[in-house]
Amino acid sequence: MSDFIIGLTGGVASGKSEVTRRFEALGVHVADADVIARAVVEPGQPALAGIVERFGAGMLLADGRLDRRRLRELVFADAQARRELEAITHPAIRAALQAECRAAPGPYAIAAIPLLAEAGGRAVYPWLDRILVIDTPAEVQHARLMRRDGVDEALAASMIAAQVPREARLAIADDVLVNDGHPEHLDAPVADLDARYRTLAGASLL
Image 1 (spheres, rainbow, N blue to C red):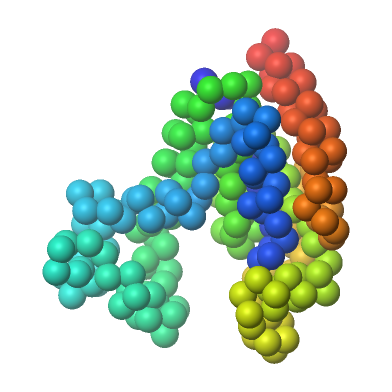
Image 2: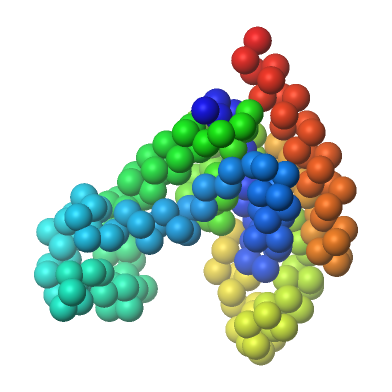
């Protein structure tokens, strides 16, 4: 059981996956909000029933699974529909994230939440003990997006602009890991953070 939970977030192409892989290599359980977001809309899940009730059975594929593409097209074109979808799925995602972290072995667990700042930070996730922000300068994000996703400079800029400003993420941070170089440079700061979190988790039990 992990009673100490770290929320990990960062902008697009900040290197969140590189960081979480290193924590996992140190034996830390990482609950991924993106993975859970897909799981809560599987057939038989209450959130899927809620989506069908609100948006109709036309949102289902022939096999009863969610037609993600059709739903995505709908909510991207309709801000009210997007808010209604989020009201159905977000509580389920948050509850599943917390449950997975609490059930994890080890002194602490990590909840990887890419849009933590956009969602409202601690006001929406009051059970996070600390928030770790993976911080990357915008020019590095641009270069990584263009290289990783094969997009042009304009699209890379729009992808970054679609998220909250860098300053908004830093404003909710307890800890900041700057990732502006080679992935190998992450090993030492992740090890330092792991040691700190193990100490803090132990102290929280006293």
